[in-house]
Length: 174
Image (cartoon, rainbow, N blue to C red; front, side, top):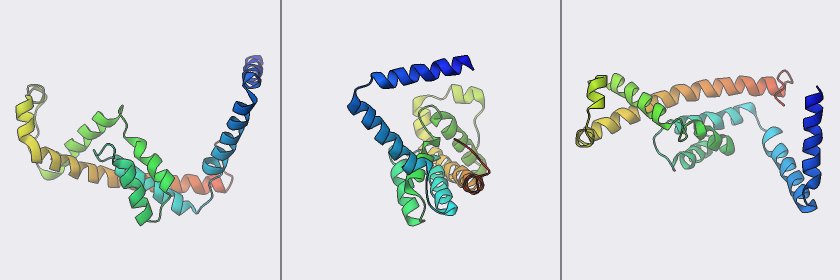
């Protein structure tokens, strides 16, 4: 308890040492953040639909276009655009390789393409990899679509449940 009190005092000291203009800017940013994100108004279905659309587009290997596609789909499906952009963050530089490898494997399995053994994968040269070309891309996009649909449904129903509980006051996140 004493440690928490000491950390609180240190934070107040740091905040007091900031210039007044920075303090005002920080206060305005916190107020904006609270209004925009924490105290989000809207129907739960609208919010959940936006998040689900973002999660769906986040599973596709389209770096740079995921957010644009997510916001465009959210606009078409009447979902929350900001949550659609946030939902695309499921794939990021850290998670991209495992996600796309998993999507490729799912696509291979669904399409019945022959799978390579671990030794064959490790000995695959760049030229052999390029010769896979369309088969690789088709398997990757079929897997991405399938996994994206499943994860979008899970995120829609899960976030809908969480938003309903949060708005009813049964869930205290902050």
